[in-house]
Image (cartoon, rainbow, N blue to C red; front, side, top):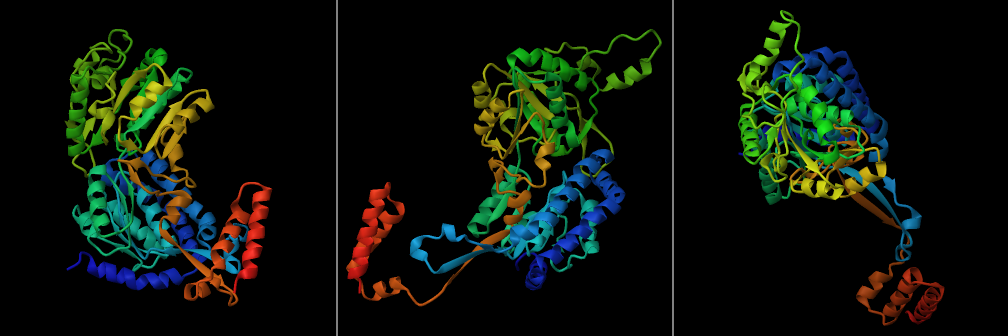
Length: 524
């Protein structure tokens, strides 16, 4: 029996009626949804913290704010984007005179959304809302790592007034994603690892089911020789430590101009000193341990915090002991020393089998080290020096992932020149991560980072398929007549038409007109 046959049947039955609802009415429900996020924001933060041990303020800034902004974008832009578009007369070729074309955006039908857990409100709500606004019904498989957040999200859509049958919420189980891939849906949106994405793409390709795959990243940050080093160091810290490093566009590789490396490391050390422990899953712990060991074994060194200034005797011993106790041995080493990876420690709230790891920077890792080539979901990054911009780009292209990147420089033209050489879906200049959540811009990657867009105009339109409706007036159909009774004048007429409309220069066009007129007189 087909997986989720009952849910699919209910969604298919509900989709035509839902698609018949005017877009403006669907957007009224989106407005309800946006208002509910404001009204229930405390409860939203509660479930995110309970599921994932996220910081409440971080959840507010990375879940509530960008989700509400994305919904507002739909409210203001979706009706126009989804409206039928008449093709301009100016774009109509001469040989199609008498026709008028309209491009419609039709829904796929039933869209399967395989949700993620690292940003369980933002990434799930936006994709579901885009699919529903476009007129699709949705089968949503939430992540098993965020069950409370899944229930909260389901209740948000119900309370906003979206039909229950049009949004079928599947069990949040680990095998739900593979089972959904076997279901007869019309389109699939998946956010997750490249490993799972490849398997999903293979199976969907066998069944000719199109998809959007938002997969892993190994994002590069470029600190050029004219950059604001202090700001760049804070950006690298933010880009690695946000959400415990569990962000697909987290900073994983920092390419620093050799002339700025010492100042950059000094600024970064101050931040490492106050590093909080982040929670990672068992699998992320295993991978991070391997990546760190690989880099250290190939000559990299682990950035250590700057030792604190001595305090007067008897002042602050207990506080310093508490700060230094987890890695007291490591703190005594010089910044250039090669040391063992920081220990993982069990414990802490949350429901994802966590371990704790402080954000880790690996200095002078080779560009082909595992940390520079693989996707990682733990707070680990490499710092590599470079001599020229071309060298930095060459090293960055070693990784097969192409999701996002950032460039820090005072020269905008120089940054844009680097961006033009990167195959990434986005490039931020003098910032990281935050601009990629702009609700009006597309988000997606290339290469091992997947395909398609999940945001902005492109994200909404990906939930539709274009259909062209052509209307031709009158009864003049010369191509019908030539099919039944070929006319020897037709080839000459076509050559004249080709020259008249596309030849180079006035006299060439004039000869085409003369040839066209001559053939027309001979034509039956």
